[in-house]
Length: 401
Image (cartoon, rainbow, N blue to C red):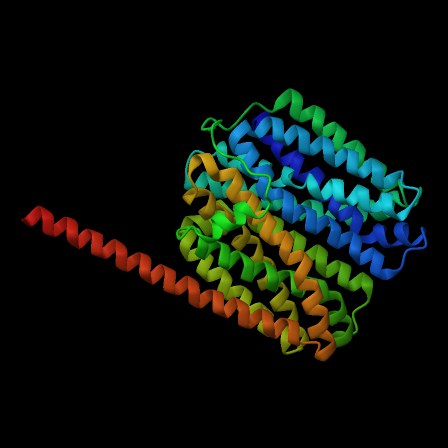
């Protein structure tokens, strides 16, 4: 694998490791400052909210200036955010550290854009994004374990290590990552309004169906993940250890599908559009099987959910990257990250309310949303086939005349 691609993959790994380290340790670290549980959840939301605001802007900035300078700045900012968080002496400084890291969250977007730049064709693009997705899954598996292990030194030590890894990543990118974006437009307008790219996305008829599908997926999946442990305990009496094993299993299936099976199996026998429709349907089925609360079906649903979400992430991102103009790929991928961050803010709150009404309700709502997404994607494919057939008829008619 070329050094440039290794550097991009390492960037994503460090980013996700940091996120994974936060999950088990942050509540213990923050409560040592006398913070309430509400403050703990607000710290998670602060990161997601600023990632929502910054990702489209940083993606658009990388379209204009190039991937390399934006990636270097965002990784360095991530390191600063971790160091501020680790050395905090008050709750406001904790928020400052998470806000800095959230504002720098575009490094994932820019890394995705860089890997797309290096792709030769559609299948290579999907395979490269699959590697990024597999790295995401591995980081999410390893991060919580690493955070728990490092916390035996102190509750702040894991965050110092995360900052050190980000510094190492910055140096690695400086020496080994060349500029990948060769279609820059220095004259392109750039606005600091974080909602402007989202407004442009909403008005883009070609990309709008994919953004809609991405929002439906994000809300459904994030809602299910936020109450998954609570559901497993309430429905089947799972302990935290058993639930942790399930999450590890999801990570393993995610990495297996994206790093090993994507190109030789899924992309060999299915096109991207077919995979998008199929995996959306698989997710709808998985949520419905979880909701019925039968243990063997629950295990089957976990496998289906891991497979569906891992492949769907890649193919939707790849299709959007393929459709987006060369000078706007960073902005468009930034919008994808921003929409997922918005889902991370909203979905857990909605899922918590639904769970208190009925423990299966979040998964039933997820089934409904993904079923609606299947309907929208089927309509889109039907319209595309009709348009293609009409164009062929027109071309054929012209030749006869």
